[in-house]
Image (cartoon, rainbow, N blue to C red; front, side, top):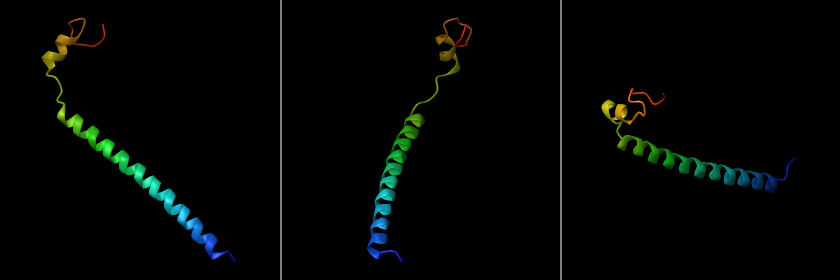
Length: 63
């Protein structure tokens, strides 16, 4: 039979590990929300603006 205090210590260690993982996931979620908000703020350039940016004038990015 295992010592009850050893089991308690193991469980406390698991709780600390899981809390660390939760903190990391919360941080990642905030970063993803910020990225999503930035993407929504930016609107794509109109087709005519994209065409004028191409070096060949053909409307493509590659020659």
